[in-house]
Length: 312
Image (cartoon, rainbow, N blue to C red; front, side):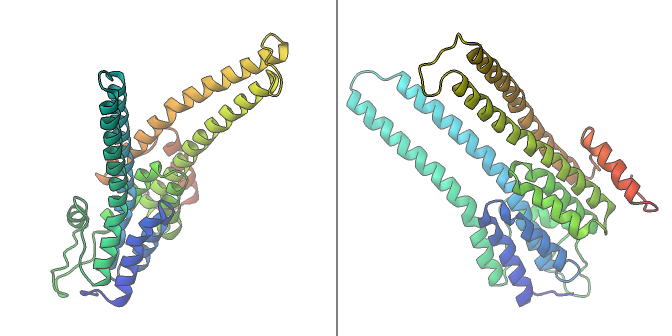
């Protein structure tokens, strides 16, 4: 067992952390690094799993925080615009300064998200045991990773929690549109044969995220289709005539598409929240099953795994 980082260990750690700069597409690399280095190097395995957690959990926290900041900034600006009175020049100057501050906060928060992985990569290149704030030490305890142990007493990372961590990060990655599906897909391909639990969780996560993504894309398509049809039938290049049968049909189709889009717009966030809940449950030791999707995937995998014992 490697007790000090080798060149190969450092390379995998650096690549895993820097993959965050790919903004979602790089989520595959930490899983590949963990798969290649587990039972070879605790250092590389831990750093890869930590990088995976930062990309999945960190992206979730970053997106939600960004939404809160944007909403709060919008409310502040609206309040200022609504209370404008007196010296308009001073008000405009104050409003402009507030906008600049908000822009700096948004840009700084965005920069910080990408700065931490760069710092992590540099530290790992130097052979340091880097830990992300809030995440690193908790993950080390979760995996029982202790780099201070000597080679005679040091053990490998806790296998069950390794699988649970990878599976849960697949659930959490649902907010990474399209690219988030690469996490459960990669885990399923690389380690599905070694762990029934990871195979099931990855498979149902992939199906669940695919359904969520299709609904999101379908909503966009329906809106564009209804809007374009509305413009064409009501007179795109001529004076609109809403009293014609074609125009009324266009209005009806556009209204129906808006209704469907509204329903989907309410459903998709709920599915995102359920994905986060699934990740939390799996991380805490549950073999979580999504409603309907989990049952169907479980049945499909069980039929393909004749003779393999299923987890409770």
